Length: 595
View 1 (cartoon, one colour):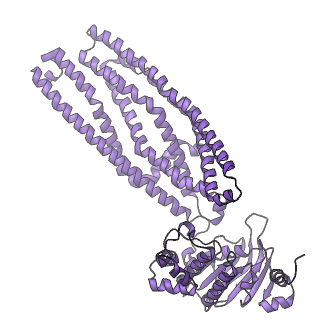
View 2 (tube, helix red, strand yellow; view 1 turned 60 degrees about the horizontal axis):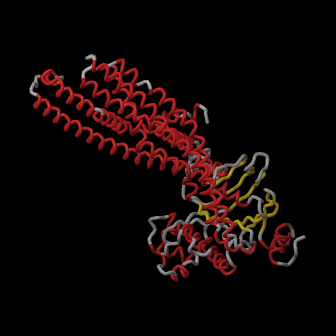
View 3 (cartoon, helix red, strand yellow; view 1 turned 135 degrees about the horizontal axis):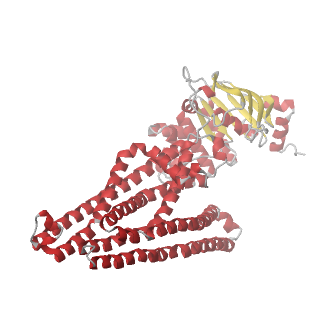
């Protein structure tokens, strides 16, 4: 993009503002890089001074300081050489240490800040973004910035220092030679920027091709069972082969151009080096230039021009880093619209919830809930049923304030949830979802996710309430058994019971069971229902269900259809009413075949 807001200079300014807390460390690193390069440029001067001593003897430049004897002059040069090399090495160690540690610290803090900020963003924001895209920002982009700080920043500083120091030396010592020596510099700079512009689209293609390859590999690995069941292994190998060939071809084009850069720049360097040799040598021969100075200029010409061959590579690294910085800081700059309210519960929450004329739409003009009024009395079990897409799970999201209503209000103990702190609201609600999240840790750690400080006795008690204790004990390591990524070592029913145990241990005044038995067998469903009945006692329980058998004992059942409450009552009353609930019940029990 060419927009000014995404330019490298703008991105660098944003990065500097973000890193203001590291100012002293950045200044120290910059200083060490510059001093290292200054002392790195000193040996050619010492070599020139040695030549001057040998040729001029007691009339050399060093002799002017009172050291007349040639041997003594050489000893002085030896001491200076040791000092210069020692300082160069010390400052190299210092800048390596400072830049690398700064890169590590900054990438760590930036990643944590970006991830922490991501957790505050609205659910609607995530709907328009892929997990892979966010991972690329939180991982690849931040790593790209780290790579630049690790080496690229120092390279740019040292190239700049070289140009200033060597250029100044040339113009002081021999202005005419300086003009010819620096003549290739504009050509090298022009070539570097032109190379960068030409290589950038090719690298972009490379990144696109490797992204496609990685995406297909990830997709295939997650779907390996399906591939095998349909005997499509050979076809998928061929698909990966084609994508890998595309990636190889894109790399080949980029390599063809990048490989030609340094040889072409080297030929430009020859011009400056040859000019110094010929013109400087002629001026030395005529006495216009001292032999020692001529030696210094010859050595410094290479020191001036050769680092510029890497300028294209360094600028490319800089451009990538600034593009990545823009994406990361853009993420951090996203403002959440769902934020903490100013109020708190005056006492321990009772658990009365109410939807007051709630209207909500994911897509403007297409309401999912349209003027819904619902009450969930404290201490009672209330069920919400309806066909897929009727708005059941949307109500859960509004109760937890993952989204805000368009109009109307969601109230908790009479308080609008928009007036409450998000943490306080969500601490008061326990959610058991059909999509169970378990992390790659032990069973005990997963149960205690909401209460990390819970004792083992409390964890076991929660598992017993969820009817999970028996199967946990049968596992090789019991409560210390590691469940694997997303709990893949456990069955769906086992994962669901751990999710219920986790909610029990949290012990909230409100418990929401969102399709908690939708993906389990009948036996597991019966066990879950028994545990649900126990944990529902004395707390507000909201059951979202597709299977009507799980809600028949609820105090009140609300039937949703196309975003509106069309029926409410007990199970028996709704069957007697012979409306939508009765028809759904008949279909599920086989008493009547749907038309």
